[in-house]
Image (cartoon, rainbow, N blue to C red):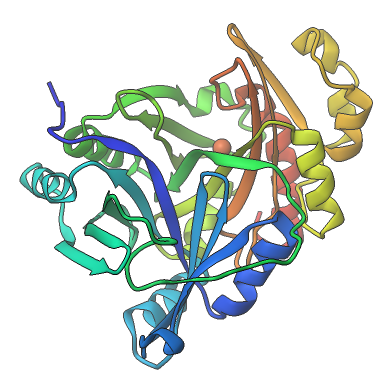
Length: 364
Ligand code: FE2
């Protein structure tokens, strides 16, 4: 009944607002194998901000910094630290996406605007979602340029350490206590999404810093956005720690898929990405818990990769430590082998690991 009269085809890109776009872009390039494909800034006639577009297979990250004081980008960085401003969707009709969203109660972040260059035309519009985060609707009308009009292609010829990341599996939003359900209702009402999976604090021992989570998904379940809120536990919830440092609701993690998590994590570790450690005890009874898997458990233990199973198969996952100084945004690397779940079986081990990091930060 909540069908939308346009289609969301997938995650288009995520835009990060950061203090130093040049160096942040280089971090994702050198440690995770993202390729710089497009740029805009002073050299392209943009005076107030600079953006680098990084691509790997279906994943696009836009890294943006202000070039002057008192900008909306600068205020965003001052309040939240480096973080994700925009979770952009590819749509077939940006006008319709914006108009429908506004009619259904969303607030506009940008009215539809057609932008052109010699490579074609696109339509962009945007709405606000939780915190200061927005969703841009990107409609490319046979656009053949490197990213969007206004960006100059980067002809990058150096060898990159390919890490085999393929697409965005899901993007998670953290909410302040008590706001998870209203945010899920927003996605239901505005986009017609449904509740795909939930986990509540009863699923997680109260010894551990607890959370509640509802995964929202679009019709064809290509776009999935888990929405978290903190739950009461004996210790401070990791979600509350995020909210304390981000100051508002915001994007907690991007889960990036790979077809070979072992080789992905090997390269990323070698290039200096810090992952959350997994206690060796996790692997002791792993095969009893999950049955037969293709991977060698000793190698998984060596790399700290977690495994979870459901009725359809299994999945492998690992989480980076925060990717900037504030304990806010991080990435998950995930390989699905049949399972569509979100790793509930790993929460205990994962939370123990997160708690030990929170302890080091004095935030438990
Ligand atoms: Fe995740």
